[in-house]
Image: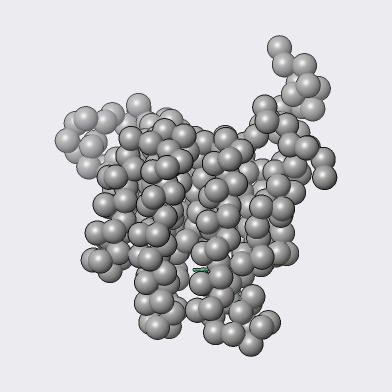
Length: 246
Ligand code: IPE
Ligand code: IPE
Ligand code: MG
């Protein structure tokens, strides 16, 4: 396999981890077994990202819309999340990984919230990589929340309408201190965003693979990163301008 150029790695990778259910169905297993297997991929991808020196990794673990799933599946996912956080704390501390979260986490079961905030606190001084879990997250809901907060500040007089810029609005999002993703990966071959980081992916490179999430391991991830390194990111300019910037 071709080698990755360490100087051209994405700063921020965001992943829509999809296909656990189909992975299980193909094997005659329950959807829950698919989610269980999926946590092994999470471990592998977090570890690989850290080894490569990727600074920001955001994983879509549970969407705002996922609350509509059968309650036993939601319960199982919450249990898995709780166990994952507990089992990974040591690895995070050993490897300088800081945990963060985005989304309406106040909707999570109290026990999961406790584990989550405890892990965030215990890892807050780590600086090698930030692992952000999107939990009860929806991009539209995030934008509505930002608008409300902005209106609140306008009422208080701490924000002037003519001072609202793209940068200013970004500061009101969950991702205020996070650079926009350079690469968005979606597993299981679905060509949609499913309400993930709507504002933030304006110029993100998108990589969609048919591989189902439980099968998405280091090898597949390196392929995605290699593909990313071959892209020419133009941000609206011409190809010539990208090659010879003024
Ligand atoms: C992704 O796998 C995990 C979550 C959304 C929580 P799915 O559960 O969506 O798997 P499919 O799409 O049904 O195969
Ligand atoms: C997106 O997957 C959400 C997560 C990966 C957490 P879904 O399986 O929920 O998305 P849709 O329903 O296929 O769009
Ligand atoms: Mg799915």
